[in-house]
Image 1: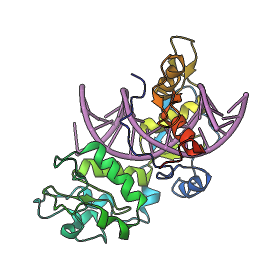
Image 2 (image 1 turned 180 degrees about the vertical axis):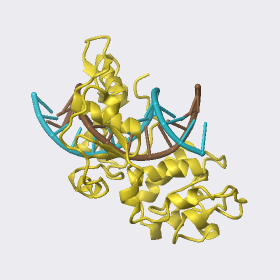
Image 3 (image 1 turned 45 degrees about the horizontal axis):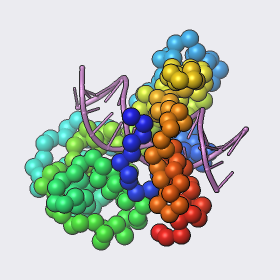
Image 4 (image 1 turned 180 degrees about the horizontal axis):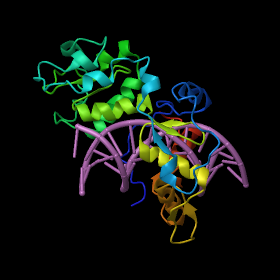
Length: 250
DNA sequence: CTGGGGATGGGGCCC
DNA sequence: GGGGCCCCATCCCCA
């Protein structure tokens, strides 16, 4: 069903949206010799290039190295050694990535992302006091590029890709963390729109955008303003509405 | 200001 | 364990 969001806190500026400024920094890790000319249109996959993060790692030296020799670590002993360069002592930090209090129940997914949002929101100095100081019984894998930490190496590796951005578009040089993100981006070059609306035949390059579009065909607008009872088809529209001053409260 | 499309990021799940 | 995909989330831009 369309966008039944778990209503989470709305952080207006919490996450990096890769605009020009960021792009500029990104191009720093793109091999300068990427072929600009050839537009690999025929075969989408041909435009996919996942550079093995070499350029970026040139400044981050040790990252790929420690991943392999990691050995299972006892809960008390977090695998910080290899992965975490300078970070906090494993015990003390224990920002309890997944222990965001949820009625005492460990909630891994949304709370972690919420915690991540929180962490990216607060300065490292500030965040600790607000976090429950729970000593996690699970190992903590710290990202050395940001304050985030994960309970599995796989999750950390996945996260690290968002720093290394190994997938580079051969057409424009923009870099992405995952191949499928790059594929979606490549559609913006090729114009491919594999997702079409069954109601109006409008096509979209992204399934999420089709899903959002389907909302426009829906009679029911599910996002309602608490103050004026206006309803909106998207949560973002509701947020814009409230931000524009309808709801003086908050 | 609103509505909607486009683009993108990230976590989780499944294979 | 990794890749691919799904879904959620959010921002930007334009009409």
